[in-house]
Image 1 (spheres, rainbow, N blue to C red):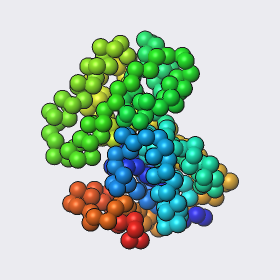
Image 2: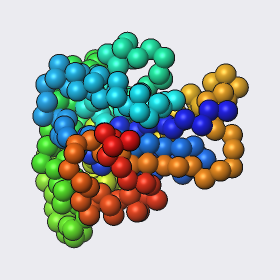
Image 3: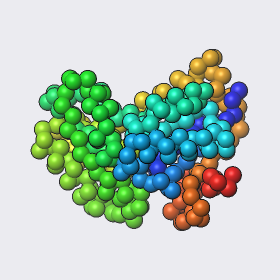
Image 4: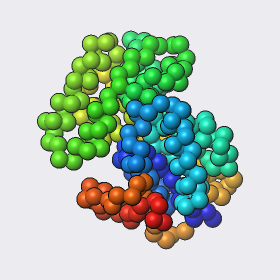
Length: 267
């Protein structure tokens, strides 16, 4: 029995939908969710800079949190640093949120797949390699949408959310794509808006099912040696980097999740 937590890591709240999705599948496992607000946003940073940030942060998390599985709940972090993190920390299983290009490619008929992400994700050659030369990738970077989800999502009404999403859907529709990959975890907060504005001609894809299945498969390895295997309530935590006290938005999120809230350096 392994009572250690599963770590979800993102620059902000973007990985919360993946965290919630996994909890629905396996509520018995303990979760530590780390929001790296000190280095937000990841999407505007260079690959080499992001690798240093994530390596340094992971060293601290291994000492303080001691996770049994680490989930990079951020597409930018995954395409930029997953390989390096696996090399630097070979004893810790990593799960990356790889944009769902392959299933989108298989489902499409136009030979053109849309990918909406951060600058770092869209620019990375890894995104093109996922298509294997079998389709054209039409990518759009939307850093302002990341900021909106992080800072303006809660007070925004449905009309504003739909208006923001629609302008991107129109660009993808004009480009002739019929499948669209949400290549940034933050965008899943607007999943229903994307589906509604894209219907019926563009189908939306994300990686939530695949990520949960991958975590479950790691828990099941070696006859389930990594599983908690008890009925106690998990002690889930929302952790923040930085020294500034959490404002009301973080306190409200922790309450919604039923997670305790702490600063990483205070643990």
